[in-house]
Length: 195
Image: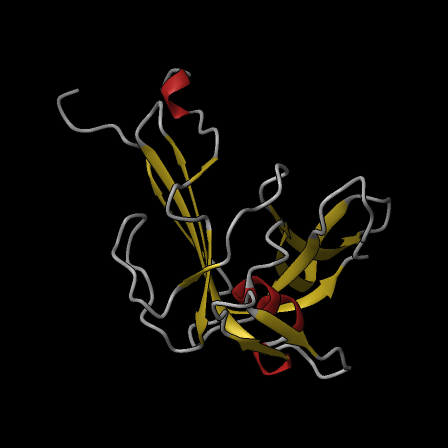
């Protein structure tokens, strides 16, 4: 098969949101464009660095007498996604950062905006399901990653300064589902038959 530029995907955010979260057990997507239930909550704008997917395999090379590699053993496998949430006034985004049980929202009134009260503590953040959606509009292509069981394990330093916006740099670690899988990418190349 020859090289083709139509096979090069450049990820862009979706208008409807590129990062969604839902409780464990929420109906999973079955394709790059399958309709999601209302349980999937959009977490708003993501930083211009997009998403970084990391697949980490720890291996050890076994060598025979003379130094030749005869076997490669895998001792560990982890997968994660790194991203930056930009909407620091979005209660749903804050629930992803601090845990839903630690974020209390008092609705806006005619006299005051919504009040968001956050409790910061050492309680582990919950395991939830995640979906990352991107598209290449030029190709009509879609790229979706479904993480059935993911947990925010790292929140980077939160800078609060007048020269920048408040952002939340997150690492989401993926865990094995009942089938032993951690992520499910769904890719639609946008190339319809006959075109």
